[in-house]
Length: 561
Image (cartoon, rainbow, N blue to C red; front, side, top):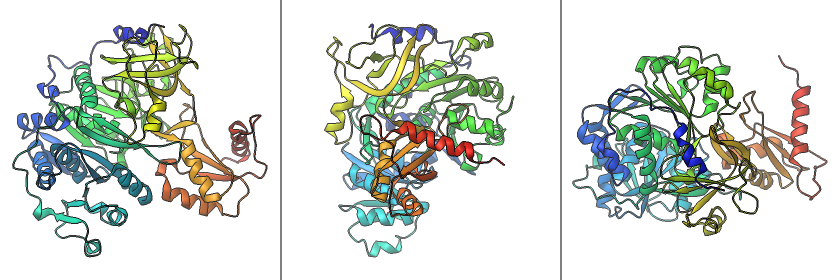
């Protein structure tokens, strides 16, 4: 197989989104994400950089807040490019400033989502081996549990607090700095391309989250390409919908800030009914998972002409049904629409497909939109079960290579060796990431996503290893346990997870409580069914097909209102 076949199909992409005469900002030539932001902060100091609720910060104001977080990290000697700073929050002003402050101090930022169970956050903080913690007022209670579990003393920065929390007297091993003690950095270290930018933890099949360290040298090639591809400029007003633990948030922040544009955090209350928010702020770019648009359509909150100001709409994280894309095209008639694809291990997104502007061409597209062609400098290949190039027209496992592919899993050489490989047939001996996704090449549209080779699922764009859910269920029930993605909407997107347990003395509610303390909310089963006669396949393993039939039967028997 010609491994570059998909790369050549980039010629199929239509023209860039209309923006008139516009050149990409020089800031995207930066060596680090911090330098990229500083370029815009110097060039666009008084322009709006970030809007959260009713508060708008200019680039100068956001830089000052970030500098007050970077300063103590630098003064403490935590600025040599090897340190990790955790940000505990949920898309608040301090969280965004904390991310920038960590990067300005040459720290890798580690986002910790307040929506996730504290037990899980403590495990991730320990696995990341963090040196410092930035906490806003909303995270003070959760921080106590993290600090109690911390295996070593941490520098704790409290930008919204005038005095340390009460538990600081109990947890004296940590050093606490409040708002008045946070002084701007007098000088900033020079970031390196090999420095870590962010460390994210994804669902793990063993029941434990696994970390992916993305370096500046991985993130910047992506940002440079999409800056040129989408021509974001200072007049753009961009959405921010993704949790900061979701790598698509990196696109939200740094594509916007690298171009001097304004970033608008869409509040949770407007997430599935954003029309008024988008019109009030005259948003020009949209980025979400397809299921967000599907939910809007189901709620009748996606109507023709709802988003006239949008010029660019991007979807990523899940398969994009054509039906949803067409509904969005009607709602945003002035917008280019793209379906982009990529796992965290390959930095945000690595392929893209643009919806044709000509409606007549849409009839030729499959019901699930293609994921298109690899971005410049990145490579795709399909391999068969014997790790040989798949025959032309055949499906295979999608593998990725290029500057966006990371080095492996954080301190897990065992997992790294399974997924990050070199193929004998590749004369360049590139490092390839095995995605576990099935795909096929269509000569007209590029790559088409066909599903998974394993039991991984996507819920609202979040990647979930169902084995992780099963491991928690098994520990809680001390019995056979299984989980499947269910229900599936008419668009084929999974809406949640249901679970099954064998004979156990534990109550369903007790098992669910165990799930709530160990799993993020989107991975907690919506229901647990007891199964006395556990189904096994011919290999003696759990027969998930039979379990799916059980829940389908239950759904058919349940009366609808």
